[in-house]
Length: 147
Image 1 (cartoon, helix red, strand yellow):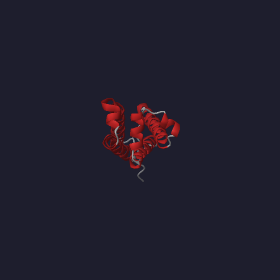
Image 2 (cartoon, helix red, strand yellow):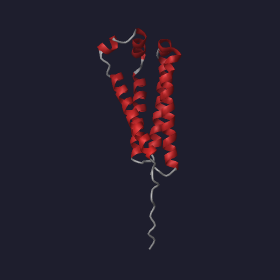
Image 3 (spheres, one colour):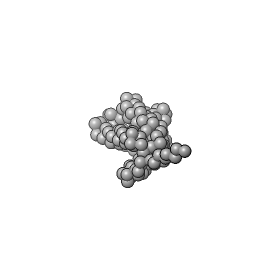
Image 4 (cartoon, one colour):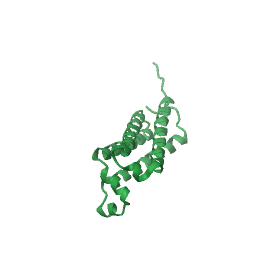
């Protein structure tokens, strides 16, 4: 009788810290998306004129891309914490939706004239984090931490 058992490799503390960070980060993204799609008239009135122009020029499909980016990110983080191999797929979907959202925001809205080059700082940070999370999930998969 063959009684071989496979023991999953132990995950380092950093795995859990990165998973928790990814979940909190993407839940913040969900909150931002919710605030974006449920903006009140008072909140809209409190914006500067250029910000209001960008908001009003944003098509509905761009908010859908935003939703896909953050909800796929939440699923990726949950997948990582649950040690599931589909975490990487969710982070990839999140990254693709983020790229669609960022590029489209500067193509179909007056974001460039409203924010200029400084407006690219936050999208660059988002991109770096999304790339890192995808890389980390793939690394975790390669090390056998995800099943």
